Every structure is written in C-alpha cells, then in structure tokens.
Image (cartoon, rainbow, N blue to C red; front, side, top):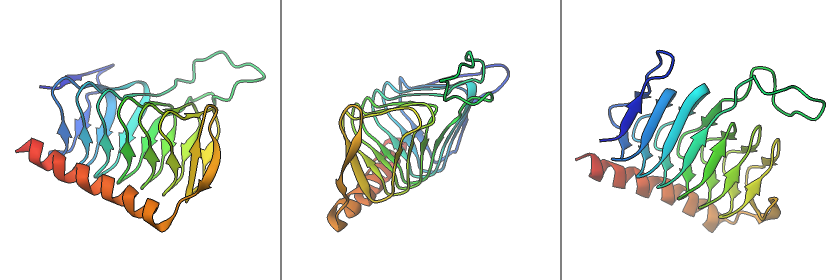
Length: 183
C-alpha cells in the first residue's frame, strides 16, 4: 500500500481511477487526477503549500515533488513570493524517473526527463521538454515546442513532429500501464 499522510488536517485526494504504487508517500494538500500514476518510491509532499497533479499524468519511480512556503526570508534577491509557490502539474504530463520538482509548474503535455530538476518558480510550458539530467533554475521557462538541456538548462532545439508524437505516446503508454497495475 502507498503511504497517505494527513498534514494539518489535510489528507491527499486521489481520484479512484489513479494508481499510486506501493511504497509511494503522499502527504497533505495533494490532489491527483483521473488515470494518473505515481510510481514506486515517489514522495509527493504537500505540507507547506499545495500540489495538484492533473489527469493521465505519470510521475515515475523515485521522483520527489515538493512546494515552497511564503515563510522564507525575503531578501533583495529572493524569487519566492510572500505566499510561496505551489507545485502545479497539468494533464498528460510525463515526469521521468528520479526527477525533482520543487515549487514549479509543468503545464499540460509537458515533459520532464529522468533525473531532471525544476526549481522554484520555473515552468515547462505545454508541449515543452526538459531533457534528462537538466537543471531548470528558479524562474526559468521552457517554452512550448522547445527542448532545453544542460546544467543550468538552456535552449537546445525545437521539437520535431516526431518528438511531439513521442511526448503524447509516453503519456498514453503510462496511462495504460497504470490501468493494468490497478487491476
């Protein structure tokens, strides 16, 4: 069984058609949408802000998702607003194995590769791709239709039609796989 923990009276809300694997830990103000999947060894910790995961999104093994409170010291170089940042993940998103998402936004159809890191206030737009191992620093944005790679991440190239088809295929494959695991 996955571990579902309440925090400050808020229990994770998981759609009945979602799959959360044994050994995953989901804490606090977290919503997981229809037909989504959170795989083995993931931690989704909605304690200091909220986390929303859309429909048909897959969060692959070993991924950590957290958010930011507004309680950080406000300095002249702080990029965190006074109310902090939630973590928002849209529909049909693929998040590769061992990724780290912290106080960021991954829009519908976005892709985050294995061992990639997305930091506070950063975003991957609809149909954007952050390559495996990339580091998207605070406040940066991967535009729709682009692949960013490296540490720190930078524009590499535009997505081809074949790349775009692969993004959709990954989401569809994981939706089917999660349905199989549910049964």
